[in-house]
Every structure is written in structure tokens, then in C-alpha cells.
Image (cartoon, rainbow, N blue to C red; front, side):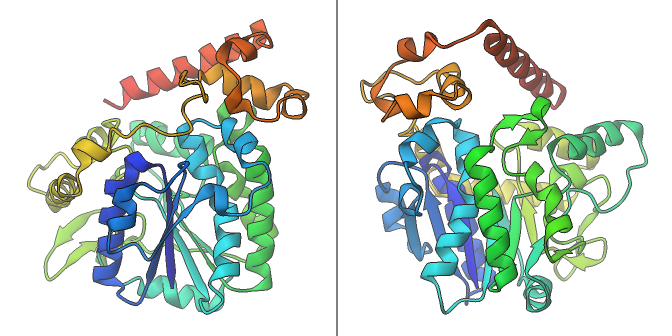
Length: 356
């Protein structure tokens, strides 16, 4: 089994915790890290639990600089997943099972049910939610959010080697190469919304085991306890997704749905924080993204990226967008584009405030 993740250098500590947990619980698995940086960071090279670190620009993209320039850092980390699966299928011919996990995940036990599902199915997904919410605020927090951001949480996705999986990876990579943006008004949210279509097109198994992809947004329905092991609704905890950790949304949702501070979820969270500190989070978490600047050193504004992707002639006119400047792209900014960007930023700010 291959377990892979996609990160920028500032997420190296999280990927380190993920990789160490994989090796502890699924020792036969190989961990492959896709790094969205111009060069491999020394900390990634030195870490013993990474079996391979591959730069995103080496996955097989055409005109990678043009591709990556269109994306914010979050969009970028998700935009390469389809191409990453294509790379893994090609370069690891001896492996038949491939699992993507977000870097902010810790694995707590063997992924037994997943391995079994991959023997029968080409693609395995987990939904954000497996049970209807009862309280209206939970409906608003979680069910409405799933409708906006995608039914399936793409912190996890697994495929088994097959023609069906290859077809899926090619389709997904194609869509992400064109439309992997945080743009909910246009009906897309990074890589995630596209997968709402996957069960319509492909052989997809929806894994509803409560121990997979436990996360702050489903703690209203998934009850964690510790007896002989960590269990969720009576089943073994397989992995916990610490999504929203840096923004504080993780902490806010945990406190809301698990008010009892003696619950074992707080022990898990505290131990996760400790592991991040041991992985040098305070230093590595501040590493600047190497695709965040023009060649001159000027920081790339969000509008410059949006202009480059939304003005049809620019990718043909500009050979290397990183050789330009914000001033160059500002010539193409329209009032409509500015208004849309302001609205999107306002919605993000409001969401962060509400999740505190």
C-alpha cells in the first residue's frame, strides 16, 4: 500500500506526524510526499519516515509554472492530487493500493476495512457526514457546509490499480488542471466538489465506518471513548482529521460538540500538538511558500493570480508569469473581478469569525 499526501513546506511537521503514525500502525505501507516547492526542503530529505519526496513540478505537468501561478497556496496543494495518482500508478508498478491522506491527519490503527474495500472496488471515499444532524445549528454548521464544499471529504481518497481507477485519475486530473479554485459562487471548492460527480461516473464505494475520517465537523454524531483502544460509536478509531487546526476552527468545533473537557478527544488533540512541536512546528510552520513571489521578490497578490486564470489570452501571451509583476497584471483587472474578490474575502472572514 502507498499512502501519499500533498503539502507545501510549512506543512512538513504535519506530514511528519502523519508519516510516523502510518509506519507505527501500517508498517508495510510506503509514504510518498508530494512537495509543492521549487526545491526539496532539507527537513523533508532528512526525515526517515518519508519513503520518497517528489516535487509537484516533476509529476508530469505541462507548463507547470503557468499551472501553479493560477492557484493560492491552499488551492495548489489540492490541485495536484489527480496528477499525483497518475504518477504513483506509473512509478510504483508493484503496488496495487493507493491512499491519499491530508497532512493534518493522524492514523491510530491498521486500515483493515479500507484494504478489504480496495480488493472489491476501484475507488473508496468517505462522506463528511454519515448521519443526519438533529440540531439546527449543527445542520447549518455541517449539512449546509457539505452542500457548499462537497459531500465527500477529500482529506481521504483511495484507489486500487485497475482500468477504472486509471480512468478516474485521468478525469480528475483533467478537471483540476482547469478548475481547482476556492470559488463557491461558481459551484466549485478546490478539488472537493468535483468528487460529488464521481459516484455517477465510476465504481465508487462509500466507506461509512465511523472510525475513518473522524473530524471536528462530525463529532456531533461520532462519540469517542477509550477502553482497550480508542473507539468511535463502538468501532475502532482508524484516523482523526485535525482539519482547521491553524485557523482555530478545529478547537472551536471540538469545544462546541464535545463540551466535556475530560473526553479523550482532548487527549488526542493535546498529544497531536505535542508531536507537532517535536517536529519543529514553530520554525517549519513559518516557511514561506516558494511560489508566493515573483522572480523579483515581490509578493504575488491574489488578484494577479485570478487575472492570469480568468483572462483567456494571458496564458498564451505570458510565457512565465513569475517573471512579471503585480503592476503588469493590474492592467487587466476589471471592476467585476475586484467586486467578486472582495465578496469572496468577506465570506471567508465571516466564516472564520463564526467558527471561533
